[in-house]
Image 1 (cartoon, rainbow, N blue to C red):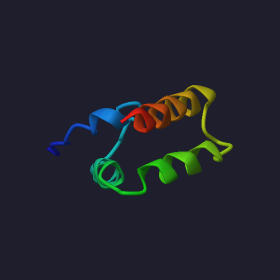
Image 2: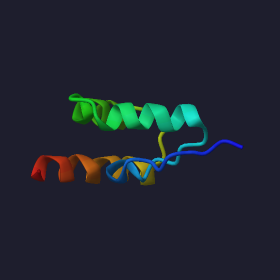
Image 3: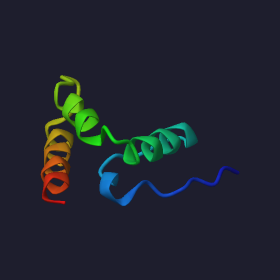
Length: 65
């Protein structure tokens, strides 16, 4: 049985499906380029509108910090 970690709280709008997803989220969350990574997500045409809104909200929250 795999035991998954919790997703980083500021990226909890992304639902990891595997341990690899959790590992990737943890690395992204601690990256110095988090805002760049989130901005690139906005250009992904396959992302749902609700997920794009979540990404935009997270970018705004990051700017306030």
